[in-house]
Image (tube, rainbow, N blue to C red; front, top):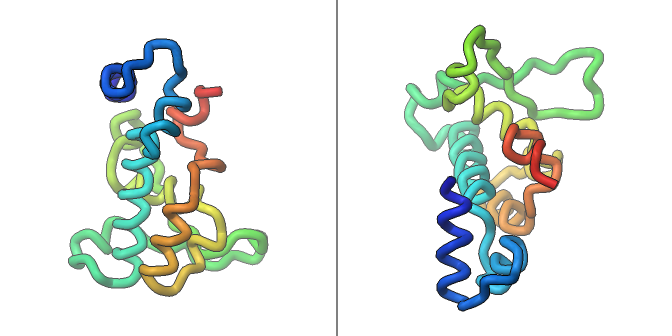
Amino acid sequence: MLERVNLRALRFVHRDICSSYEELLQKDHSTSLHLRRTKLLAIEVFKILLGERPSYLSNLISPKCNSHYNFRYTNLLNIPRFKSKVGKLSFRYQAAKIWDDLPQEMRDATDFKSFNRLLTLWSGEGCKCAMCKFTP
């Protein structure tokens, strides 16, 4: 619903009722609200992994130990299992899911400056969240 409100606001600001949401975002030189939230969550996870956040946040996520059968992907987080749908909306689940969906070079960044540069260039491709899964 927030994306629809953003679409209406962009149409009003640019006085354009015919263009699609993507075209209006390009005119405005911005990204969708969903991609902004995803990037903010990825920044928080990166700071947690660097140890720049309090311990109560770092206790919520845990790195996956290197297994013998997963050679392609490294620097992944444990995705917790939940019995209810509400658990999939938690910070613990969303943070691990978004971090694991990031490209490998972003997860391998060693400092915040390089991670942020890579994150600004990332357009959201490869995201497997429920919202991105059903949009064409």
